[in-house]
Image 1 (cartoon, rainbow, N blue to C red):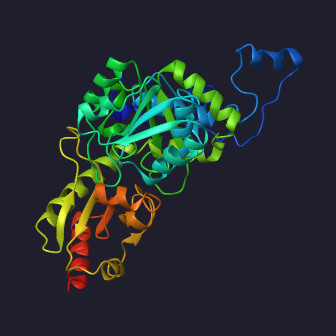
Image 2 (cartoon, rainbow, N blue to C red):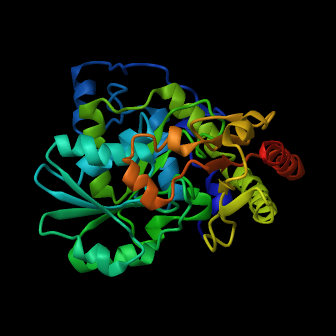
Length: 380
């Protein structure tokens, strides 16, 4: 019988730990690896030795890629310099100039920018549309379409994607599926179990978990990861050994952090649903038996002054990111979704009153009271 999830997140390191008799994985802070002679060096190119140059691979980066793959129940994984570089490597492993992607329209703003602008400049076209209508998605597929791209829980409106529907469409049209699983994390959801071919994480977020590392991970089918790994090497999207080590350390506590943060988020979402200063609460439903995640978005009522609200949050800080152990808030219209066209933002519901909350591990009553007090102070 294989190890269960909580055990795998702690015991995912390579055999290198046992070989060195070290309880913790050492940091291989080296740019290159040495060889006894030319024959020994040739053994790397024959696949007999793992490491040559840290841009090609390093024990720490290998641990992160394969560790996340193990808990995602994927065949293989590769670590990258950021979540964005993981997305880029995955896309370029599948799609070439002249080909086409169908993507959900409610995505992280940085992803939208990559797909709409940078890929367009590379000769790759993308159609953005609502994934809530299976027929609308099917109608967007062209003879040149190669990939379906979406997020398991969307940013910032927290819509839970219908991954079974995505798989049905992919199978019908022989397409590759790529899912950003950053918000859900492998603790709550493994898209590969729904048939996803590629899964990405901004490991900067819940994988690292402590707001002290910038990293990405791409996992999925072995043949696709091999191609993506080549893109990572060629494009210089590799992750440094130290940041990989930090992310691996964070991964060990993913389960206990997500359990606490999800419980706190559930309590906050329920409390704010009855707050007169909040017109709408966005919180995932039926995501997982383990919980619905640690993100909550709210629409402040028009009677609440947004500027005053942010100034009244006290110990809760404003940050353009998420998923640390501290509760933070973000203002999507001015940060993560700033570059999205106004008409698209309006269609999606990303308004002047929308606030995205990343719920931390603090006492739930302190979190709730701080938000309620900030809303009360800012209410006209």
